Length: 166
Length: 163
Image: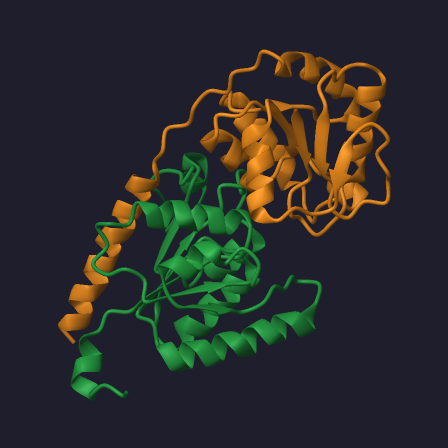
């Protein structure tokens, strides 16, 4: 099963839902697709879908999926990296009113360069990337959260000491 | 029960918060690695009552509501709720991964003397978020998750990425 999600973003991203539906029609996706489509007027014909999933159900589908297709949201990318899940993203674009700025393109590009995700920048890019997705093994990401937390720890100790000296 | 003043003075109160969604995921990642902090956060801030399950386990939390730059009325709502919390709790430090509602919270907290630690979201790769730019002039520690961005700005540090 492939899990398609447009994230929890309040703006619609029908373009990805419709393009994925078309990919199924054209035979570029052979597996079954389950989708969280968000705010979406387009009615998919080839997949099961819901508007929004509860977090636990969302996690269930995410973990069960053989691969995930989504917008280039950081939450989804992070979750895919955590679960070592092959992820294909398509950035939401400001010009279509899908997002408030073009940050998803930069996000997609950077994580693509790092080997963490596959990116279809437009609908036209989907067939090639779907082919790659079948064998794509995402590069695992080294967790640096400890280093960030330690830097903050140093700062906290500094201000705590300066407070005690007052 | 009200604590005596001298005891209260010695408290070191950390507040930690993030908007629901990706920002919260980033914050949770940070908190998972925060064993070395001198204190755990005394309370938490988020923006929606959905997805608070993970915060609930950690401690008391407040919901300040969502807002964006296009709806000033909501911005005002967040401002008022933030003010109430800040006056009541008086945190020494606010540690946040954004976004705009938390920037407003930081602004209010800074006004009463809190120190601000801002970790700009990993989603901001080529420039800081609008909320990051709002907080940058008054943040006490401003961290980016991309080394390239720390080179572009003064007073911005890179210590690693949360994911």
